[in-house]
Image (cartoon, rainbow, N blue to C red; front, side, top):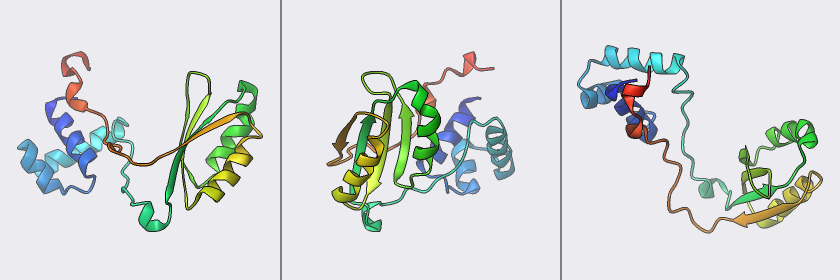
Length: 152
């Protein structure tokens, strides 16, 4: 991955719908050359997909929360299919510390969130934080910090 790849990735993280022509203008290459680079980055799984950012509140999801869950390793076999099947789960991470899972969720109201937490508690102890505001949204990885001389 070179500096041009890094610039393309940065631009796509800012807006995945950036036209090829615009990307090409920013990196001083032709559109076909940029397209080939993007295709290579996708094949190497450096770019693993494209998503749209959604305004959850406009869709009625007024509550975003982070739920910490303490489960024992033996429960993971049952827990993983359960959590993957929950449409309100935005993200689930296995983490270090007092809790083993950190789950990001979105719900229309606290009553439905409370019901979901009740279902989670069959797996173990929980601790929940409700989000008041988000001063920094998901912004992607800073690829400019990568030392290209150390990457094959």
